[in-house]
Length: 370
View 1 (cartoon, one colour):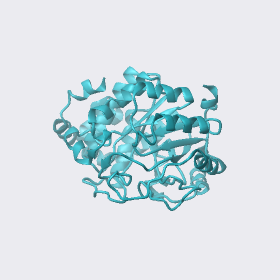
View 2 (cartoon, rainbow, N blue to C red):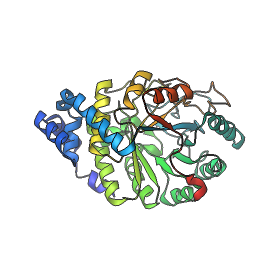
View 3 (tube, rainbow, N blue to C red):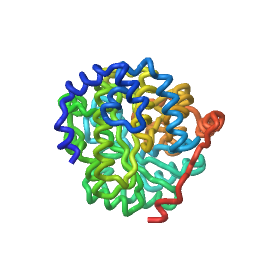
View 4 (tube, helix red, strand yellow):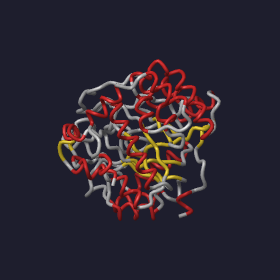
């Protein structure tokens, strides 16, 4: 279990070692052909800031070599905003007084057909964490409903047990995104006040359960703004290293969500600048040439316009973060505010204008082949 490896490290010691990295450490990491976790520390350290242009060029070359000039497009499909957790950074938190909504099968298809008309073949199903309302039966039925219409179905929902992941994989589920939010175990409880999500270890063990269930792709990440982003990403990289060793047939992706405004949210404890986020994304690409790097509409137009050349491989477009937001009930409460409100076609034209190809489906229909 990753927990055993995680427990060997001390947050404060890791943080200190990152900030102690020198220019020589950064240059060594840039010039190597194979990089280890210590090199990643150097690349995300303050010492790497003067090397950003060099890192960006290297990240660009590596990305083109591995992924070509393509950007995968996906859309989130929010199924429910019901949640049993109290988390002070999320608009869906149980203690927020808002109208709760869970889409019916008919409404799911209304949303799905809107996305299908936009050209999407990859949908990410998102719910709050409410096991009784949007538990395994609801998820299983939703995947079964959407399976004939999309080439790729992913989920971002509450952590499940291993046998439940196997059930969903049998229905055609391709990927699961599960973010630890922060790897700072002591401070984790400051943000997760009530509900199953407050169990740090159960959440930490989720990628192990996914690997054991044979999931094809696992998405990891932290919520940037809760704790020191450098230390949090070190532990994310440590987690990915462990998973790649133990579940080598599985694909992995990393997302970089920054804390965004929403009803009842706390203010970010730490702020990452755009330059620092570029540094982080380039560091990930230099460290791991195979991993998929995803950028959502949390980021603004200008940032997303530039980052597609520097390491990103997957972007969302035209996103709505409220259940029914595309076609059923556009005015329902969002989980968080998006920052890139361009239409799907506008994002597609931006990608093509940069000399890249917007890819809707770069694989055979996975769900129909199961």
